[in-house]
Length: 405
Ligand SMILES: Cc1cc2nc3c(=O)[nH]c(=O)nc-3n(C[C@H](O)[C@H](O)[C@H](O)COP(=O)(O)OP(=O)(O)OC[C@H]3O[C@@H](n4cnc5c(N)ncnc54)[C@H](O)[C@@H]3O)c2cc1C
Image (cartoon, rainbow, N blue to C red):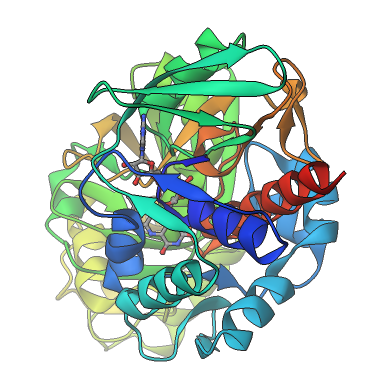
């Protein structure tokens, strides 16, 4: 019995059935399965990532890194690609490593999963919200649903995602839950000169997040939005600092290094511009192609430099201020982005209570876990689905093995 008709539940169910388990059933609380797959990746579903080195792959998981190394040695990104392509879903990698269905439509991933569930005779029961699970004697469980129906099962895969009910069920079976907090969110900042540049994305930026005595650093692309900052660099920073930011009530200091050079090098560069382009206006020509012009003008204006000024007019003190802001531009983070745009939950089932070779509970034999319910989460790029496919596949196989004995 698989509780939860999401990505990891489907992978677990299809694998168990394909490996010979009879009467595999998915119990889904809502009226439709795979709804997160549908909205994922902006409707395109970033299925996995072209990161083929497991030691490198695990570094994309702020929580779960070590246990995942063993899990990925059994089912990793290449296996995901093969698994889907063998079933007729063509995938394509983008330059940054993210892998999508070639059709760019999440509905094709859903179609592939549903068709393979049907082909393997997996029963899918919707509107079946599981309330609790009773462990009976003789290796059997009684599943109680909110609609007062109950079902017996020999093995149960809990694949309820970041949803509270799965954690409550696990708790009642004796598991400790690691407190859940959101991960992968944008930052709200109060610097209007910056947010006025909304829509601009900036490459090659170094970010330093300071929360009390803790410092988190990232390098990458950021996106300026009307309330603050987002984009891959910010989302990654939010993932690695998710717990500390939650503790500080999302108050922190963010230093942005717009130019990836030392302060001395930036000063030298600006000086040589002052010499070589003396009669050109600051806004017309500047040395940093990663900074879009609209942002460059805003940076100048934020330190009271007239963008129409010619380079020869830039005094030494202005040149110093400009170097300083390019090297370290501080902003106050006031909150998480307002739209609840976090994509995953950090926290969940404590991995020390799960045998990651089988995904079986060490506390309650016969219960298995997969997906977001576990204390595993990745950064953006297809890493969250990858651990869903991996844990679902391992659990499905382990259930099949244990039932065949
Ligand atoms: C907007 C958005 C975009 C995303 N895009 C991507 C992306 O492109 N790539 C990527 O890797 N990750 C992405 N993610 C993350 C990814 O969607 C999740 O990591 C993944 O869906 C988790 O899968 P799961 O099977 O563990 O849980 P879920 O997909 O959440 O499925 C759990 C299922 O269990 C059901 N359920 C819960 N409780 C019960 C119960 N008591 N009884 C019965 N059923 C129950 C739920 O209704 C749900 O259908 C995105 C997330 C969001 C929110």
